[in-house]
Structure formats: structure tokens, C-alpha cells
Amino acid sequence: MRLTYEIPQGFTDEIRWFRFFSLRSLLVMICIAAPGILFIRFFSSFGGTLFLIIFWFFVVASVTGLTMIKMPGSQWLGGGGEYLDQILMKRLIRSHKKCLYIKGYKQQEYEEEERRKL
Image (cartoon, rainbow, N blue to C red):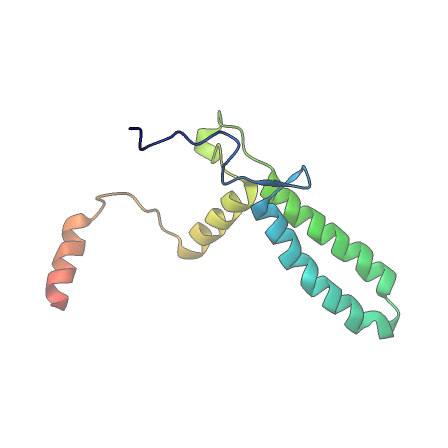
């Protein structure tokens, strides 16, 4: 009696919506477009509605585009195989923290510090 079955290739985490967008990029697009609608409704009384619609469309398109473009796998030193928004977020975090995480680096100093805390 067989208890395990292989999952067909059609069932993956990268579900395609509207033929172009993955689930992740669709969620990013919705989360960026929703505040834009609120801004447009708020600033419509000031008369800059058309300018704000065009500006927010470019913001939504650029941020959504970052979630759809993948770095080539051959550029593995520059984040190959990852999406551009993930690479930009990692670089932002690294520039803020100003440190590299290397497994085992200063491990003895870290363990001594942990013993002192106890």
C-alpha cells in the first residue's frame, strides 16, 4: 500500500495570478496601492489629483517590478537567484548595522560574554 505520492509540479509556492504576478508581488502591489488611494482622495481637494495619480502609478509599478525581477543565478556574489527587493533590503540592513555575519567569527569571545551574563 502506497502512503506517499509525489506532488505535481503545478503546485508550487509561486502561484501566478493574472498570468504575470506571483502571489508575493500581487500582495506588495496591493499594499502599496492602498495608501495611494487614500492620498489621492485626501489631496483631491487641493487640485493635484492627476499629478498624484501619475506619480503613485510609477511608485506602484517600480516597487512591484522590484519584486518580479530576479538576479541571474550566475551572479552568485551579487545575490544571484534572489529578487531585487530582497537584495536591496539586505543591503539596507547591512549598511545600517555595519557588520558582516560570519559563522564562528569571534565565537570564543561571544561564549565568554554569555558566561559572564549568567
